[in-house]
Length: 423
RNA sequence: GUGGCUGUAGCUCAGUCGGUAGAGCACUGGAUUGUGGCUCCGGUUGUCGCGGGUUCAAGUCCCGUCAGUCACCCCA
Image (cartoon, rainbow, N blue to C red; front, side, top):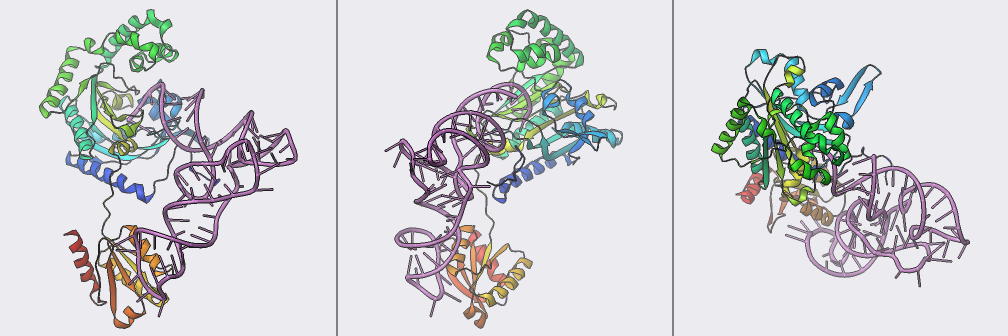
């Protein structure tokens, strides 16, 4: 209908839906802060190089999903496709590691990936996440995974699976990679086209493939868990022991790989099972990336974190009703009364109440109908009669009840009326 | 990037065999000279996504295109 539309995959969020967003965001902030995290905000735009080096050249994100452009022909910039790289960059840029042994950051905001949009997946989407620097684990890994699960349950999302795996350290992964290639090479011809390509670029990703022709081959592939070094194994056991002690349920999934290159050792994903989610059931994912800071030019610093998709959480939450806060709608019968309505509204707002007016000049019937549907608790009515007698007429909009009160000191009447409703 | 489905009023949708467009909701006026929810009566709202073709005639048939949506891939 209209020619000017929002860009594909990028959505406006109207006040009706933002109630749920704000509730989710504030619970996330509260949870993160209870766990000792401080908020960080980084730019939406970063040098392209940052993502190429941290996320990995052969990943889907870097290969085909980034919004990249030249800034006046000079710098090559990219809209951030995820949050971890920017945090790592900021951690280095402000030499945070030199000032404190352990750093706990959380973030919240829009990310951008140029994919074909579908249910639960958009080109501008929103993530919340946390990063911990300076703790090699394994106990912190479990603490943070547990924090995520508790946050989700506070939102009412309890129908979920926590998938857990270990990718080992660099050396383990190199050994496993070779073993995997040795195993896959004879089957090369039977693999899907994508997987054949990944055999060269990123063989571990083949484990993640959902192509039917790959399934039987993957089924019998060697498991990375059998290639863990002694240290890797001790780390993995530490994570599991702590989760067991906390009673946080998880499932070992040796084929969990995920599409980012930077992970080492602990890797996990939380999947929702609600029907609203469609095929996009990955609610959150994360793990350990001990090599990233060094890769970006810092000194070796252990790191752990996760990110969750806000749109998907909202889908998994279903339609929770918005708690409508008590409000008063002020109506007026004529222009003279409308002048007074504005003055009355300001007075009550100054007293701390949420007030809305209806000053259009339609019939009182129409104004009342709108007040009723607005979810307001009270309607105040001003007309010639009320003005002459120095009173305000009030009506309860939920249930019965009406009356009038002196215009003087009306604020305490509002408090009483709303208080009665709540109490 | 690939495939399916859908584009008609602000929203949800109907529109027969091709004959120049409708319902419900919403909004609004009235029944009730200034009083909500229920009911009744009236009123406003259209680039039928866009472009082309066939036809005396296209919302309807054909082609193209754009958009939305779902799924694949992958991820949050």
